[in-house]
Image (tube, rainbow, N blue to C red; front, side):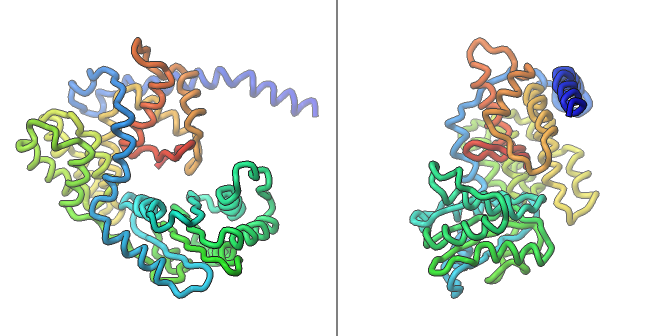
Length: 386
């Protein structure tokens, strides 16, 4: 007991030193800009605080360009199912194509305003108890949160009662990776228990096999966007219509849109990156060697997503690279509490001194910028790495 306590105290005492070393390591990033061949004018940009109100409403709108028919298809499969209790509709396709955005649009549709709605981010780490607890937590009233059970048997019993009480429920299971049939059967059984209720479940996954295994209706394979749709996303994200040089930029922009290869995430990231950038930087993106790398590695792995994100990362100002690199200490799929993350950035001295904005305002701005660049997904209180 004493030895364990001593060891714990040592770890606590050493924590400040570890944090200082981490800060030093992260700050070295700011010295490496010359390795990325970024135009010199990008490096000299002063820190600015974007208008959060301008950014907040644009993400879903941009991602949903050209997806109206797809949304109607999903709504049709949900409403047309003959299943008495639970309907499972999977949306499958490669990463970055817009599965989560489509599911979010379905979730927010007026058709489901009277439904109890639940959103679960599943991730690569499949945890049935965690999924069940998350669903229960979102179905319970705030004052009932202490009633969320911990063991799987009690979770199933509590969930069965809640499904009956709520009658009509929409559940989104986002980013499902689990392939084992027995685990998927347990997941389906968890949501098929309520008698006299109607549960609609939308699943997003990259794997066609998972989609076929869990579905009760025909899975939906989300097609890639056309080049014109990708250009539409880029135009919206970079405020193209407000530019005085748009006629000169449009041919270059359309060429860049083709390099997105129908991936919404790539178009969104590039559009945000090119906002307010001059002609020379648009042309630099168009001719960058990263596109050759992304197409020569593996045509089936959708490396254009990585290419667009790499370009966006290279365009990041040093202070934003520092904050984003810090997020690498969290495990994959981890949900970071937004306020806690901002406090950590401030404590580590990542905020550039400003006479105009508080550290907290800067932290909120950094989060919004990372979301706009598609590096983070923001919820109401949490964020996670994409």
